[in-house]
Image (cartoon, rainbow, N blue to C red; front, side):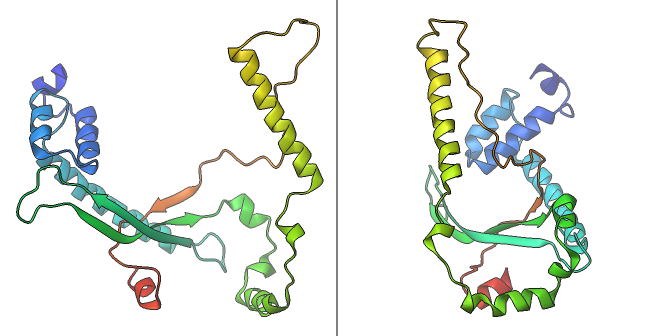
Length: 217
């Protein structure tokens, strides 16, 4: 705070706070006070930062869309409806609470390891059309949606180990230290902890429930 008051260019934390406060709907009056005591940058600085970030995001989206994860595969565009309320604490004429109905999404590039694990002939339009032509003849059975006996045993072991770990951590200790108590759940189909390659899109005032809305998105 002292460094920021002495030199307004030393504003990394304050700029991050101002962007967070702006996104969370903090009023301008509160932001002025936070800026006065050195906890936040001004609202004008936050808006300048948002404009700069939007230009950077636009360039990043163009780069991501131009890059294909495979020769016959375009990036995945994932979109969904988003409804939220922007609540105004101090209402005035033209400044009231309103509901936002729109669409949000992201661009996803699958990992190269996943793409390499799929045969190249399966990533063609012909393969997709052939698979879709067999959908009407595909039989769906309840056993496809239910866990197998092996998966049920694994799930039971996970629950027992979680209960055991909670008892040992918060309630008591084993009376016989020579008896080992398993607190490690069994490893099943372990997922990779590598961060996915996704690029967020901006909020769009459009609906994906119709062909026209999807075209606008």
